[in-house]
Image (cartoon, rainbow, N blue to C red):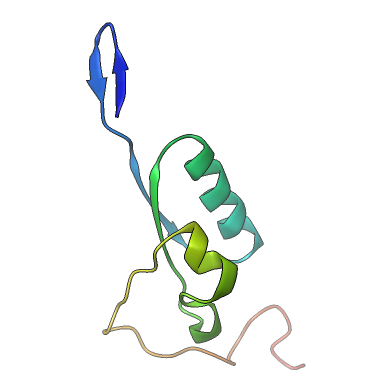
Length: 77
């Protein structure tokens, strides 16, 4: 909560989709600006693990299929 002479402002709620390099930067920027941050990523290895879990709570979606190991920057590698 931010209290000013004009009144009280609640912090913004931000949802970050994707926790790659740009997603982590967005999480950090939103937190520095005072927002309440939550995140989601379709890759199972990035869902709620390690340092990312300390930055923003992850949203659990049960209707999304597992896409781990398919596609990416180098799909043939």
